[in-house]
Length: 76
Image (cartoon, rainbow, N blue to C red; front, side, top):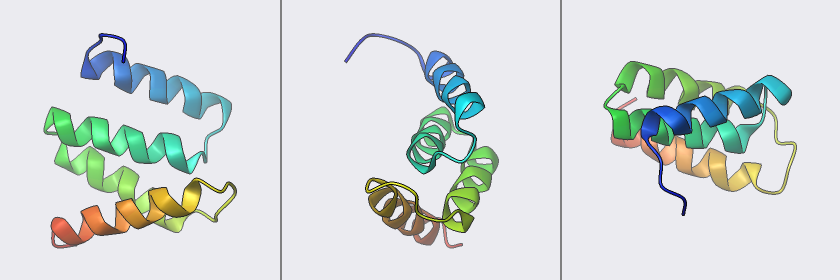
């Protein structure tokens, strides 16, 4: 993995989402970035968005499962 910061990670995922706004995998990993940054409100908002999007890609199912598990961990 290349070295970087969570702020750089957030920027890269946001750039990806400009190209494909409903990319579940990018949204899920953005939520993980927010989790690591301690930005719970942003994390939850993105996780909920993941759960409301339709599956478009074979990787989406895994991301949705992980998002649902994380929401349960948070008691939501």
